[in-house]
Amino acid sequence: MSTPIAESELILNARGAIYHLDVRPEELAPTIITVGDPDRVKAVSKHFDAVEGRYQHREFVTHTGRIGSKRLSVVSTGIGTDNIDIVLNELDALANIDFSTRLVKEQPASLRIIRLGTSGSLQENIPVDSFVVSSHGLGLDNLLPFYNYHNTPEELQLLEAFRGQIRMHPNAARPYLVEASAELAGLFTEGFHSGITVTCPGFYAPQGRLLRGQLSHPELIDQLTGFSFENRHITNFEMETAGIYGLGRVLGHECLSISAIVANRVRKEFSKDGGAAVESLISKALGIIAA
Ligand code: R1P
Ligand code: URA
Image (cartoon, rainbow, N blue to C red; front, side, top):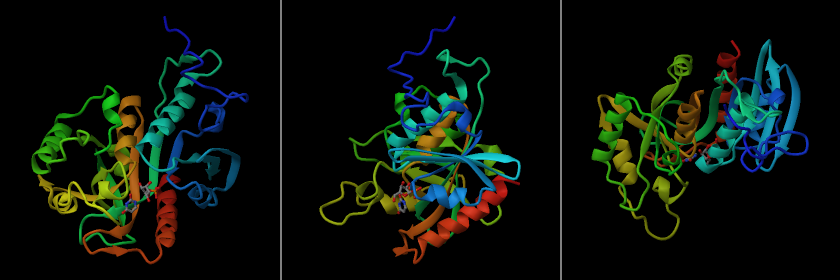
């Protein structure tokens, strides 16, 4: 027999909505688009035929509506896997916990969670303004080790190859790796590059970028670009994908991360109009999601 989840763990506000997102269970759709930038939420929901609700608390903006008969929510996560911990757990709670009894529902629901973000390319032939589907999220952050999760034998092989080829600083977190939802990845093939996405715990030194000072791992970009195992390569890096894939694995959700490339770190180029690239990714992805 299960016990109700305590008020300190499942935190609900005065309108019965979950603490950080300020969303109630009936206000969330089963297909969810996540974006980093709160302003990007309206750039997604402007494509909806109808918006049924808008919610906001801190950097977490949610719009729920529909395209045709497909009900969708778009949620901003802000930046980083620490925020992903909050967003994925609260989305899961909305779907899988009965807020009136505080009990976990007997039949778990699996959400479809698709990140539409921006990213830096690590390959010369993946130019700015192109799109990358993350076949795997490889986390250099420290989120997933706080959870119990399982890896497939293929994931462990790839991870071992990474750990063998790329020696992280001795005080860095131990890298982890989780594969995308094969079902979702299969929908996004034409017009998308695909490869391993490295998720970093920062934008500057953790992505080999430095404005002042010194890097502890100056070879990081070259090593990530050169990684190869059984014809798999690292295509790009950003700051959320591995956390989304990892918590998707822990909580039983189908997850996919797609990025518009705004920087190419090999060619040292930055998009002249990243906003247009993101707009174009949103239109293309929504066409596929709502089909
Ligand atoms: C850094 O500028 C941010 O951009 C990328 C990174 O993952 C990080 O969140 O994604 P978003 O544009 O979706 O926020
Ligand atoms: N987002 C990142 O995290 N890195 C980049 O280089 C561009 C976007």
